[in-house]
Length: 275
Image 1 (cartoon, rainbow, N blue to C red):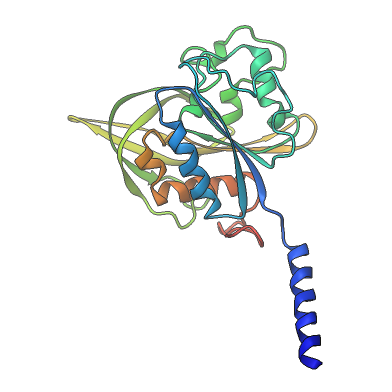
Image 2 (image 1 turned 120 degrees about the horizontal axis):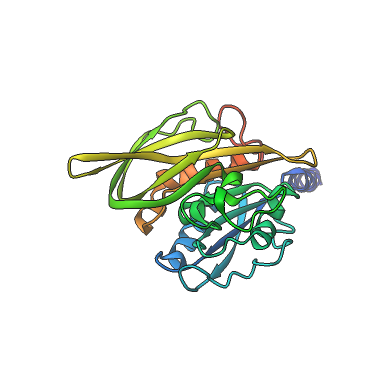
């Protein structure tokens, strides 16, 4: 009888603990466009992130042309309803008009949903090298790169990139070690906005001329409605080998947890969000 009561008590305690445990973060991963193996990378990202944190990644993948893939989110300002974080990894350089971009940004700038921006997502939703000149401009319209914090305009050649963490005190980078990627693309910047915080730089050696650029950064903005929204970005992630690298997945997962305010100041996941 005592044994039965003990089992019942244990089961009740387990059930109560499960009820109190934080629910997994719901993450929307948006991929699309051509020139990249997003069909494979979306699965690598999902598996890698879910194995590192208490999250569930739902995929929204679209095959399409280079500049204007038919992303289902376009024109729908409520595409992120019910999600806790959105990962943008779609190649959309031809989608830049203010009403469309405003709808893409609405979950972030109005609803306060944090963002993670990967590789081609860093140069998305813009026209030309500097989207401060994107037309038509409208009063109060924030561009995509003003939201992410860095204007990215393209890359040079391909070679291994030496990653050096410029800020090792930030929660998203604490404990991460410098490393060198396999052959990758180093994206260049036109401007780093004052609100952005540079986390890592990359150096690519081409012949006798090294190239250096920011490869990871974050941005935190105070919104008009009083909310604060966070965005973590990395321009790395062109090749499947880089995306599958445990060091890359650690960086992306840390950035995601930071953006969702689920990392403490020491870079440790808050209770219930470590895998």
